[in-house]
Amino acid sequence: MIQTIVFDVGETLTKDDRYWASWADWLQVPRHTVSALVGAVVARGGDSADALRLISPDMDVASAYHAREAAGRGEHLDESDLYPDVRPALGSLQRIGVRVIVAGNQTARAAELLRDLDLPADLVVTSGDWGVAKPDPAFYARVLEVAQAAPAETLYVGDHPAHDVFPARQAGLRTAHVRRGPWGHFWADDQAVLDAVDWQIDGLIALPALIGH
Image (cartoon, rainbow, N blue to C red; front, top):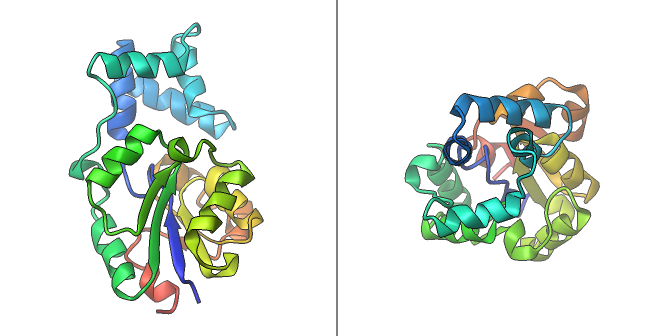
């Protein structure tokens, strides 16, 4: 039986629209340009930050991030960034005794903003907090440390096969692929993904019934 469910953040709990729009505005290019480049780069196996370097080849992304923060145009998250099923789904899981953890590839600042939203979760943490990011196996070792459950009793829910599904499966966790956001839809019918997941879901509300609680 699943004792702990761990959730990815971007395009699992939150919509990435604002994040990429803010980069487009900072770089003074159309928002669609950034979105399209991110999609193209990630679909061919690259890192999303590589899309920003296509626009500004000499840009150091980390330095640009700090410059945006210093200019008062840094990261922002509020209730409107959450998918509408997040609070009811996480709340339902807690009420039936499931430990709920949020752990994704975000900055330490994003972790602060997520914690400020007071989600129904037992722990909210990011790669920026831990100093290690998905798909590094060390990230999933940290996940299992905080899960307080055996790998077979821990479910990781995410939209990106290479960051969420495959490394979580390799770490021995159960996996659920959520079909939303660009990556959730793009790889929804990929046979390797279908073979690696315990469940494929369209949203989070179905989780209590799926895990048998």
